[in-house]
Image 1 (spheres, helix red, strand yellow):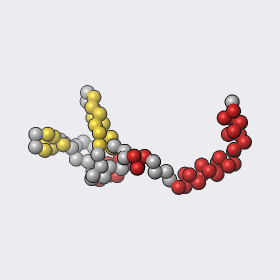
Image 2 (tube, rainbow, N blue to C red; image 1 turned 90 degrees about the vertical axis):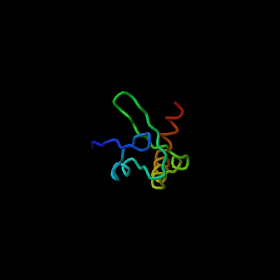
Image 3 (cartoon, rainbow, N blue to C red; image 1 turned 30 degrees about the vertical axis):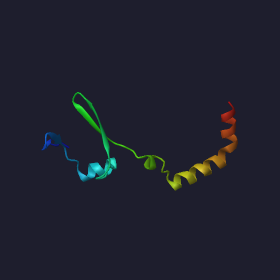
Image 4 (cartoon, rainbow, N blue to C red; image 1 turned 45 degrees about the vertical axis):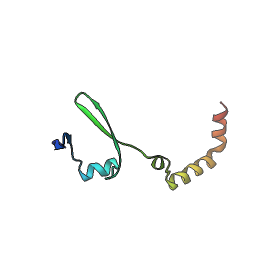
Length: 80
């Protein structure tokens, strides 16, 4: 989607649509980083430590089930 730059004081800004913010999981108070190169600027959400350590309980359950079911094979692979 094409966006126009808007003047904000002596800087410029760009707006993000609600859909883009939802896809990127960027909220109003989140911090972002930018990476610039010729013809491209990437906007990256800074991940807070508490966000990076959150693991879905369902995923943990599936992982435990997998490990318990395949423990002998996993231990054999670990020994190689």
